Amino acid sequence: MDDPPVTTLPAPDARTRILDAAEAIVQARGVPALTLEAAARDAGVSKGGLLYHFASKEALLAGMLGRLAEAISRDFDLVVAAQPAVRGRVARALLAWAFEEMACEHQERAAAVFLAAFHHDRALLDPVRAVFERIRAAMAGDGLAPGVGIAIMTATDGLFMSRVFGLYSLEPEDLRALRGALEAMVETAP
Image 1 (cartoon, rainbow, N blue to C red):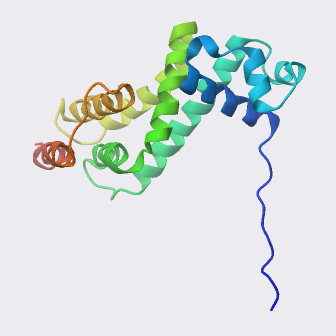
Image 2 (cartoon, rainbow, N blue to C red; image 1 turned 135 degrees about the vertical axis):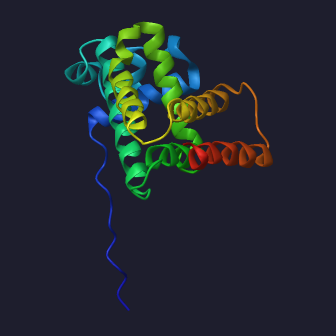
């Protein structure tokens, strides 16, 4: 019997490896450990190779934030598309995203990138701010009573912050109760 053909994925390109390495450095060792030399070394490229893609640490951070903004936007669009096209669709999507869809490692990497940019230059967060403004605008047009959508968004953002910074942990029954309370807000909103 013949073995099935082996399918291998292409190796990530140098730019992707550099961004992955930079995120991993910040996540594992903190913002001060992120240098161009460390990112190049961990990505397996020369410093010149890194500089070809990112001329400075600020350009590297901007690349990290740009990629993160694209991922957040793409994930948001996917989770909204999975919801029925009825009033409260965006709120339900945010709840699904916060309680089901978001992997912890993805959240931790996002937080590391946020912190690195915030530490270096807060303006670097502008691409992510634009995505969250788009999410907020979608929430405002979700057909819910004023305040309900923003309460859902604020609660899910708070859940993200509590998870990534270990501010407090919620037991599974607490998470179920929280989700139930937020879902009830969506269902009973005038």
